Image 1: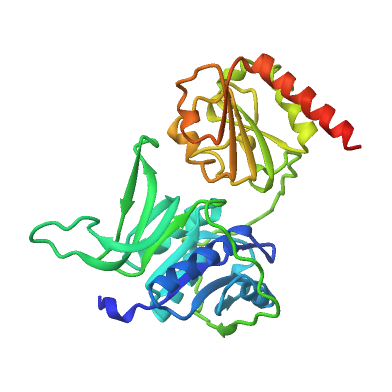
Image 2: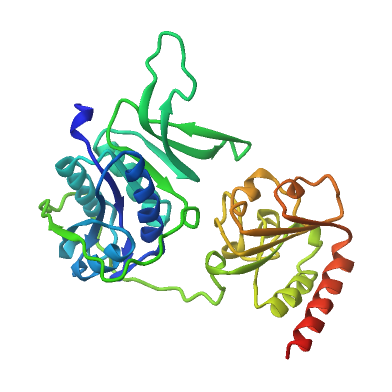
Length: 349
């Protein structure tokens, strides 16, 4: 493998039912930063599907300079084999230096299979990406390579943070958790170069047939989109006690979320979980109520603009990341806070 042949930063632009997923725009935002650090002029989005070429302008609006479109009826719905073949074929043909995929249900299936097919490594569930030297610190007798993709992710159950590189193979591939990276402000009237690519499709024994698609309609708000989150942990005490958080959220026009311990206890559905095994969120205000602040939870909310922690344990780790900490009994503090906010809201009419 000649590493010099591989150039540019590519992202997989996930779409479902011909609608782009938000992770595609988040990846484009990060790709532009990485490309600038590598002195690359173009960011490329890879768009796979059937009848999807019309989505290229939307990708351009959020930072794609070029869109490689593989449009084929075999790609109408996501299936592992045809999508893996399509993305691997794009990589082999266009040779990106970096290939980013969203760590969604689709991306977690597609990314590893594609990396195996093109014979490179993949770092999964990354929370941070940057360009730098590897090894991070010089080691006598070992070459320190420059301008490598440094991929950071929680490891060993979230008890430590690992920074991983792929210095000897290309592309450097990573899946990135939704909600971690920030999309850019839309670029008005942006246009991208559209390249149509046909890798050819031949059905094999790895193909599956989709007999029926059943869509589940969720009544739970998507916590990743919330501007204000009121999040509760085991310290809330019971499922019934979450009524205190719901009352506070109602006053703030906020959404209720929770920690893994709450989901494990059966108090709240999985869709409301924040953390390493839940969702990564970046609200303007995050209330951490009765949450101790384990690293697994903090990994999912530490990028919030403003963090308010309420906990009776003054030594709780959550206070290390909080902008405002209140030491006290949440059963007293939360209702008092709710009443004060109600009074302020009433004053303003």
